[in-house]
Length: 170
Ligand SMILES: Cc1cc2nc3c(=O)[nH]c(=O)nc-3n(C[C@H](O)[C@H](O)[C@H](O)COP(=O)(O)O)c2cc1C
Image (cartoon, rainbow, N blue to C red; front, side, top):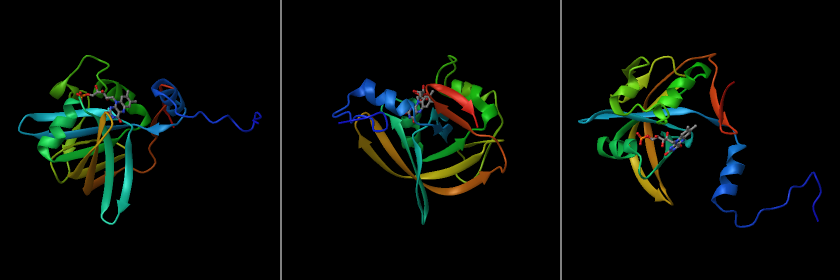
């Protein structure tokens, strides 16, 4: 028996129902970048998490067809740039929503480098510069594990979240 305070369990959920449920969960928004022989690449990602602090280790999940995924695997380095509430347009650009690809995605913001050379966003909430430690396949995605070898941050800034298929500044 269920009541209003106890939602029913949805057994064996399929893709659309799973996506709708996940859409209720607020996520921080990041731009994950890399650099190598073929230049700079990057994408917008919310599937980012801290793994360990000894040594500092993070993960990011990227869909198998992403061009940035191929570039990160080839380059062995990536930088997770966590966006402020004012950087929503950058999230749109790096999510392929403005018809801008490759190097041109970097034109509308300031970038420099920390330890690995991967693009670090000026004015980001945080930049976690990583060496790729492992790649694991999971369903349609790859889980990239990175050891954080450089870091930069800003205190007191707003953050950008994605929830209910919309960006919000918090
Ligand atoms: C809010 C938001 C979050 C996203 N999070 C991810 C993510 O965590 N992993 C992923 O593979 N794609 C994610 N995407 C989709 C990629 O940004 C998108 O597929 C992008 O076009 C990939 O570009 P690329 O092929 O140049 O790498 C997200 C898109 C949006 C709008």
